[in-house]
Image (cartoon, rainbow, N blue to C red; front, top):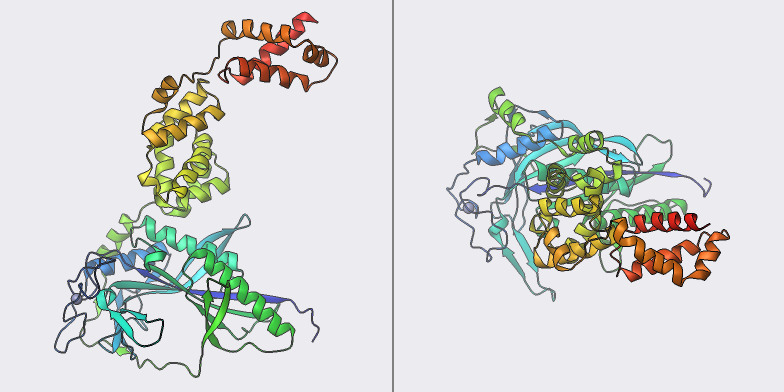
Amino acid sequence: MSTATAFETVIGLEVHVELKTETKIFCGCKTTFGSPPNTNVCPVCLGHPGTLPVLNRHAVELALKAALALNCRVNQDCKFDRKNYFYPDLPKGYQISQYDKPVGEHGYLEIEVGGEVKRIGITRVHLEEDAGKSSHAADGTHTLVDYNRTGVPLIEIVSEPDIRTPEEARLYLEGIKAIMQYCEISDVRMEEGSLRCDANISLRPAGQREFGQKTELKNMNSFRNVERGLQYEVARQTEILQGGGSVSQETRRFDEATQTTVLMRTKEEAHDYRYFPEPDLVRLRIDDVWLDNLRQELPELPAARRRRFISDFGLPTYDAGVLTSDLAIANYFDAVVAAGAEPKSASNWIMGDVLAYLNNRNLSIVESPVSPQRLAGLIAEIAAETISIKQAKDVLQVMFGTGKDAKTVIREQGMEQISDASTLTPIIDEVIANNEKSVSDYLNGKEKALGALVGQTMKATKGKANPGLVNKLIIQRLRERS
Ligand SMILES: [Zn+2]
């Protein structure tokens, strides 16, 4: 085989999403994140003998909403199954999950890559309970286990192997996250583990139909790390294959410190989970009325909102993508426009100064000290030419710091832009009189000399003159002279 064989990357993702319910899936324990260890537990979620699970209706509803929003076919007659395995964080010795009748199947999610819409198939969405959390001591002497997470409702979203690049994987995850957030299915906080992702990745010679040997990638705790971990795997597997070797079936984890993937375990043989129907729960029948009600409760989804921002507000695709990637940002933008701001200006301010300020302080947009109405107020002052864009940037910083509105800040700082010719003309005349060299340069065709005259005028007005008007007035004045 030649060493220059081109390979195609094949990626499939398994995403676990914790559902935003008050209580666990089979008992009344709280799902609150960050409680002291083993305080949100009861005999049911600790797997004591003789206890029985009671299904949380809200968890089912959120799982169904996810299935609908991901364009799945809903199994209206579905059931739960036991997945048997032994691990200390699983006190029952089995996990209640769904095997052959998940809530949703055969769905898809659309992503936009390089200006093209691409459909990524979704094999299934199933509902299950989360396991506890083990913390292994660094010196290997002991392991601590916290059962607060045991029984927290989860959905697992399994994609088809339709993803071809690490970038597509990130876009797919961003799409899943946005949908979960818009539909209030989960708070999707990757750092708190309410969204987790595992990836399967393999390479095959371009044009070959059958899949190559895949590796499984775990422990990627941010979208960026998913992309980097996959990039590293593509390079690693390419090198092996180019060298005539073969990739072995193994589970690897992304190592943040070295930005590489390291071997966790080789897969000796497939697990046999001995799935069987959960005898403690009846089959779950989802009637048409229930399903229709849930369908009607779905909000405007991210893709629809993106299209609306483009068609109704004329935003570039890029802007629409950034603004709709997060529900709160999309709502903020809508509110700024509703308060009268020109959409593209609103988009520029939000994507630029507003998000930069918030990101620096680790604030979400709902915590912004500047409300959408106040941002619209600032944009109105620019539109009215009271202040320049450059001044507006300073005004916005003061607004962030003080919570005051734009008008007040402009007045207090004495920043009103001088936009009337009668005030500016005498100043300009003086500048012209004192800068004979620049004047003659300009009159001799050196366009650049005009900049010096504008600069002098701005200086004379302490930056308050409307630069556009100054430009116009100077040219007019010089024409009158020549
Ligand atoms: Zn419990």
